[in-house]
Length: 407
Ligand code: DWN
Image (cartoon, rainbow, N blue to C red; front, side, top):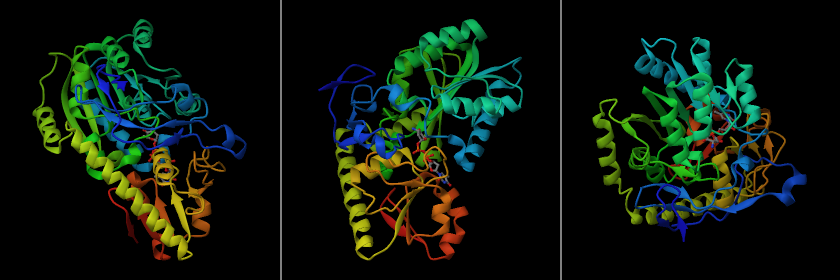
């Protein structure tokens, strides 16, 4: 039995994905023998509605000076964060004298550079030194630290209170959310807002996108779980907005209690979650069965293609892919290599299964028969630029929302 990180109730895992590696640790052969593994097992807390993994590796093992993920590798995500920044400016900063914007987990500055370019005072808080430096190189003021209540106090002392505290694909990575929520309350001006987005539990369950569950994602949030948590810290959820990014995300809008009218969107989404049964243990039993079925279908397909002598190559060496690869038992025997545009991943091997990661040119120079789309969340963007592969007869394999081949 384990304790819920949010409310302290007892929780137990409803399934296990088995031994999993650090999802963004792309390794060299001399590191194979010392690779770190942990048991990946999710649980749902019926008391505070939080969905979380039982064990998570230490933060320093995941976020450090060689962090592999640079958010700006997707053109679509660059546009998405431009729209996010514009929306924040128009809706919450207009008319304010010298607004101050803070972003947690600001990565390579993909969002904050829009504020930097507009001359808005800003601060990125990013614990991985290499991506933090990439942000600085783009003119984004960034400190390389983990955010918590103590850092919030320091930022207030050194730079003042914030008008907007932003985060994207960050909150779900942090085990001690109470410290984040307390820090957010401390950092914000009385009329300030906290806005963040993360992969959404409702979408994950509906799409059986089990690969959203990996070391970095200690939580997958619902509206009910976010409302429960921030209520304990004098903060109120005043709006929510579904997003199509990362396979279906939710954007949460929070403010000090009583400072803003509450949109009907909040109650509406909580009602949707009850209809989806997100509060019921049987929903997670069904999810487990769906994961098992998906795994069986994907492995059967890859095995059959191998028997037919077809070449299969992975597309996008995603962190998500670590769960899919290691849970399903995908080996270099079934997937020849994974193509990825990120230089820090190239020439290395995927965590756990050790499938070679090669530059995009390796894919383009010798098209495979099938491309297994680990970056399925970027499907529209990737399909738009892979016309030549399609024209050459190349086929795609996806496994979310179901295992499927298409051309
Ligand atoms: O929360 C997180 C999300 C936002 O980013 C982190 N925990 C880690 C990371 O997760 P991921 O690796 O699953 O994210 P993506 O955005 O699905 O990764 C896409 C990968 O595919 C990158 O390595 C870049 C690569 N890629 C590519 O090779 N060609 C992406 C595109 C769009 C392409 O055309």
